Length: 253
Image (cartoon, rainbow, N blue to C red; front, top):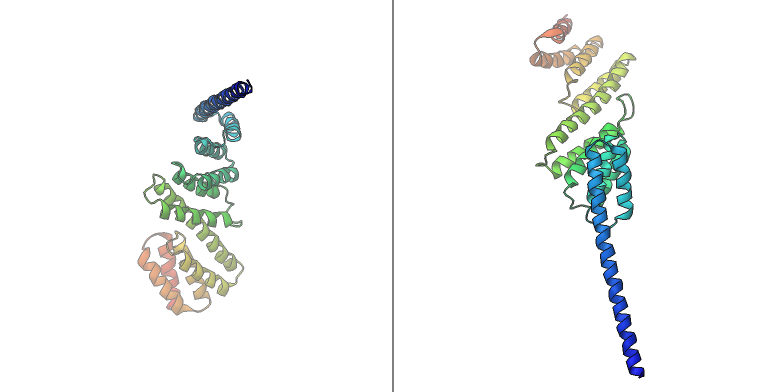
């Protein structure tokens, strides 16, 4: 009798465990389906431009769907919402998390590109500290080295050029500042450094012209004429060419 009771209790226990496991599987499948439904709804809202509503839903998905295969998608769209809302530092954080947490995500190369873009958009005006611009330059360089065939490579190259030009402008302004103060020797040193660091800058011609003018004023005419000859070979028309001719004549006086 006792053996039969024990057997019955064992059967009940096994059935209970089986029912519990089945319930857990149904709950898990239901949660997966719910997460997928919410993700589809969030994307629909994002595509419709309802960014606040999409962000709210994506925050909820991140909270309740941890471990789901859709998490990198949720992370990507959350970052995109923040970027479109112009919350660039916050968007950078979310794109960075995606690259760290999901290194095999199909959104990886775009996220790396978007990090640079968000840093670029967060940068200050040229008269302020350019730490963000220097960071953006580094990110775009790294991106192009890592993903040279990415659909975002052309845009990254364009933005990289923009960061270089902004940093060049900052250094050019430093040289011009000393020139305005009348500290010509210091200004010439700064212009030379600028030309060494940013030889392809669009401000290069003006830097050479400014430098040669101060050399003439300091009676360093041989140096000035050397710079002016380079300028004459590069630009033979317009206001700059006229100024070059004037300074070359002064060198020969």
